[in-house]
Amino acid sequence: MPQNGTLKLDLVDVFGRRLQERVDVSLRNLQLTHAPVLRGLDASRLINITNLFSGSQGIYEMNIDPPSYHPVSRFVNVRSGNPTEVTVPFPVDIEKIVSVTFPTFPNLPRELRTLLTNSQNVTGFGGAGQALYDALDDIRRAGVLNIARKTLATRLNDTQSVLSLVREIREVRGDRFFALVDRQLREETKHNVNTGLFHEVLEILHTLPPSFEGFTHAGSFKTGERFGNLQLTFFRRGGEFEEFVADIDIDDAGGLGHIFQVLRNHFTGSPTHPYNIHQILMQHQHLDPGYRFNLS
Image (cartoon, rainbow, N blue to C red; front, top):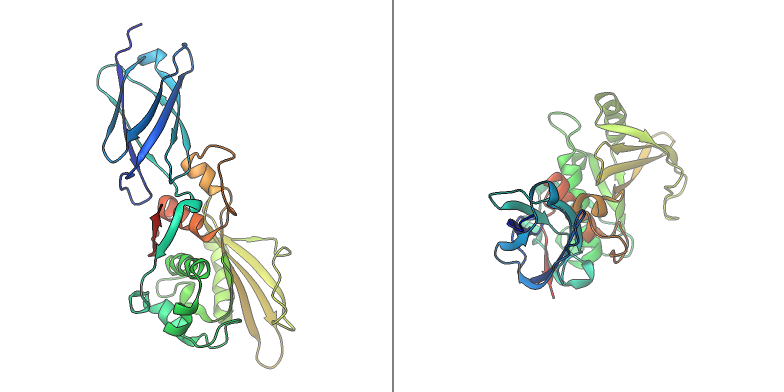
């Protein structure tokens, strides 16, 4: 049983860039007593791990632990002959983020600039447009950018996105915002249940803040992605001119752990933290909210 197998690792972030730090790698052969541990490997270049068993006896459980990212686990089968090449993506550990670089207001998507300009009465904030955008704290700003990117990519028909039918934000939280929306958004969302874009879900867990008076539930809908799906929960207030409000959020659904195969018990912060949603959107749906993390 010669140990002639080689494992070649390419360790990257959600942008496909190699990690710029040293990592620890541990392997455990599932058939033989062989459990090498390698510490301080330079992830900024391809990592070659040699002297592994290969072929039918080359099945290993591999754990990789970078300082600024969540540790992940993989099962790998080291082939005989040529090196076995494996690319492993890592989600950022939000506790290691020291700052965030956001796009400036003029560089935001046009639809988001219009929405922010129309949002004159956001709870806790004065002003609109660039003044509102600049006044948002990092968590709320990240949440708005996540939702904007996802709603812009969610097309109701050939000419309209979900974002294009959101009229005015009234309250912003880290993982969601509440907004006045066109009646057409609810009608198009219901129509797109038939196309498979949305499916109806229970609405009972979603309630409006106290500042919204007289609104009643009017249906809740999710897109069909397994992770990072968009949820629109509608509320209606009757009268001569019917009004609609939507609670708009992106659901994690355990995506960080499943997409990246993060080791259990290594999560920090809420699973629906906007920074975690950013990583899910990037890796699972190739949607870039436009901001970048600066790590310790």
